[in-house]
Length: 468
Ligand SMILES: Cc1ncc(COP(=O)(O)O)c(C=O)c1O
Picture 1 (cartoon, rainbow, N blue to C red):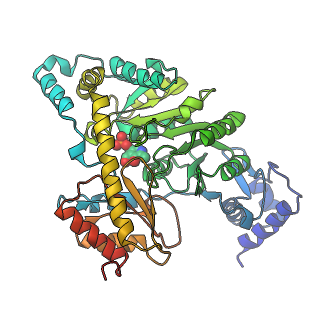
Picture 2: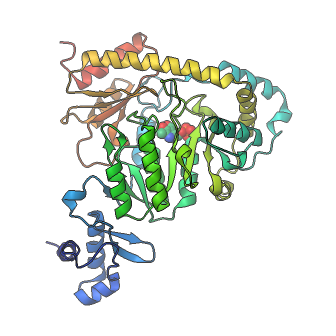
């Protein structure tokens, strides 16, 4: 046993025996080194081991503290501390690998472009392109085009969320909105909370900003596990949570209003900020648009991020954040990075949104996605055995499939890549040392001969007995 492991074990005993209580400060590294006779490095390794076990947490410049409810590792394994995130290179390699036009794009994150880029919007862009003046007509500096912010603010008001255009900052897509929000609210080394399975952009942002991630598991029925959430916020000094509650990517669930309300109460009690990633908010199949957490936000703790990428086209790169009191700070960050968001597209969007073309387009888009998702689900269900769990939710365009435990999603991805078929392996969305046995499929493509063949090849690859 290493010296650091020995030291960690004896310190753990002090915590579990109650000698050190919740939120007690541990001796500084130097004090501990002096009293124990171990080197600074040994003490640091021991503290890091205890932190990884969730027994202590660190606070920049203040030192190490006993976590709120210091339980043994075995009791607390649903809340996980991810100290150092390293995912960006993996995502980079993945995105490069699926780029070819020959590839059947079940792995991509955007809806089939045939369903986006609405003809009316393209017409508006064409008309605007003829008038050079319109390229510069509106000031393009942060927070972005006033008329566009006004139209976005109106959409919030229609959902019962009082909003002023000054609350909104236009960003270069939803990802920029998430990154800017997180950057505005955290310092390197801070703790943030993520769902265990979540859009890889959230993990990338944590890596980029040097944040420690506390992750909580999904709940089979409710989507989010409130008990684990409570546990996490009691035990760690969480600065901000970043969550997806509507049409979750990759799993697909939408959290009920009741659970959202309870979540908001917990955030309010502790004044914890929430960045809500809601880029699929318009892609619901039921009659009613799901509420966002912003609706339940009485204390201005929620920064709501969304974009037009999933409804009009990712190529436009237009998103926004309901930034409220963080608006100034986010604008300052924009001035040091992207400077401004494409003003030409912002102007065209103003025309398009003011004439209610968007509502018509959304209606058609939702109906098409619903039809396609049902077709894919039915076909896959007919051909896969019960050992394969296909998670169906009435929104969006992803199907998340849990494979039998022995099937490795990464290998499936590689095998299909050789056949020019892309899928998204589960390992892009969570951190694990085990075999990742999930895959995500984009089902926004009409089932023609090419897609049908690819679907059959996919089924054959994950379940070779399917066509026997
Ligand atoms: C959940 C989620 N959030 C944010 C984004 C980024 O959206 P945008 O293209 O608007 O930057 C994506 C894109 O795939 C996403 O799936």
